[in-house]
Image (cartoon, rainbow, N blue to C red; front, side, top):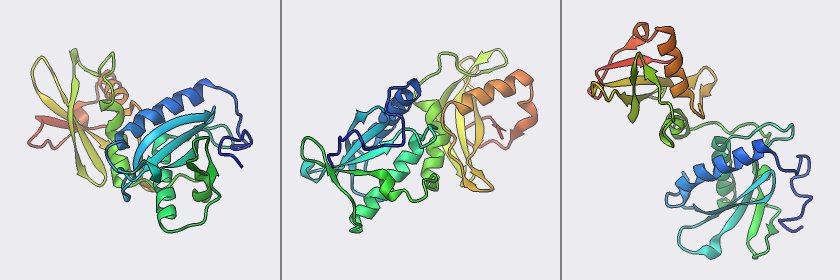
Length: 239
């Protein structure tokens, strides 16, 4: 079967949708990180992301030197019930595919119009449950939404507007993100939990800035102060 056969991806609605558009562009932005940096656990980097069907992102990876080693990995943007599959899960699944291919696993390869081999990521995702997050993914999830773009309305503490200036993992359970008050030049830290009873948690999106606004609005920041470090004058828990 051609890799672009419209029957591929059956079971999902193959029509444009605003949600699928957002998920696709979020995934593209996430994967640009791996154009020059190999995906963890492999020598492969990303050399392309295209959208052969409305609910499929095709991610091309290669060994970083020779484009003839390129393969395409088809990732569904929505699951069978029409719910979103976030980009952290895609990154973990792409790594699973690369590990399986490197280990000689059998795969039902298709071929795209350029003659490049393409495989459906679902062949390697087992039950379809999210692959377990690694510590790196959890740290990225805690800070990615804060640093990938500046909010038009940065979080406010009292009457002051603060801006993100850095981050540092404090432990396997907590990442501290630093914000600076331009009026006083003080830097405060906000501790983001990345572990729960079930394991590591990937908190995607603008969680932190929204949480700071919430805490500032209720006046509960002072009661959440925790030990600071050499890089901030005070720190707060946002748990």
